[in-house]
Image (cartoon, rainbow, N blue to C red):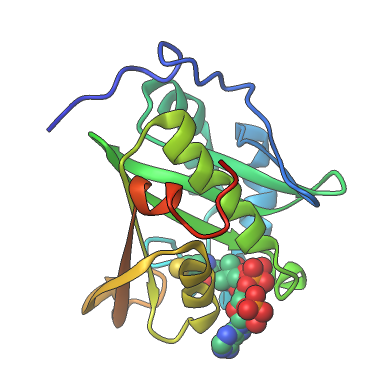
Length: 195
Ligand SMILES: CC(C)(COP(=O)(O)OP(=O)(O)OC[C@H]1O[C@@H](n2cnc3c(N)ncnc32)[C@H](O)[C@@H]1OP(=O)(O)O)[C@@H](O)C(=O)NCCC(=O)NCCS
């Protein structure tokens, strides 16, 4: 395993902001926990999040968001609140960063689905992962009954890898899970890349 330099040393300040056409992505803070709790109190959101608790627990969520600034500084996870018109509508993150690889995840409040926000936010964070963090590959995945997430990943250029049964904590049962991968090289050479 290669250890990564702490994020601050590699210039990834926790004050970084990513702007897209319609969204502002900023590092999550402990103060975001109640809003995240509200979003994950929707079963239609949380049943798709394999590692989440349902119903969510506010203390647990507060503890998790309390870890985010430390994770950022250590370079082990970079989590962004997705803001639309000054309101947090979800989270997009890179976590399980180990060596040159990490995992992409995202979740949005239900009223914001179907407007292209997940793709727009994830595209900015994938670019951040490869260009600013310097990762060489990303993993992601979704429940087999979550075609919207599959669409987002395919549009980003992720390639399907394995389909296997995995435990879903939120559902309390095994689900069929599809995993995906994307390399920095494929991202740089994607047809619509702005070089
Ligand atoms: C998955 C999720 C992030 C998608 O967010 P979103 O902002 O609606 O996604 P986008 O609008 O960027 O793209 C969704 C795409 O899926 C398509 N889609 C939506 N529902 C679909 C369905 N049932 N079957 C097939 N495609 C579907 C949309 O048409 C769109 O494709 P298009 O851009 O070609 O039109 C959102 O539904 C969500 O937060 N779900 C709960 C949490 C979750 O699933 N997180 C991901 C865990 S892997």
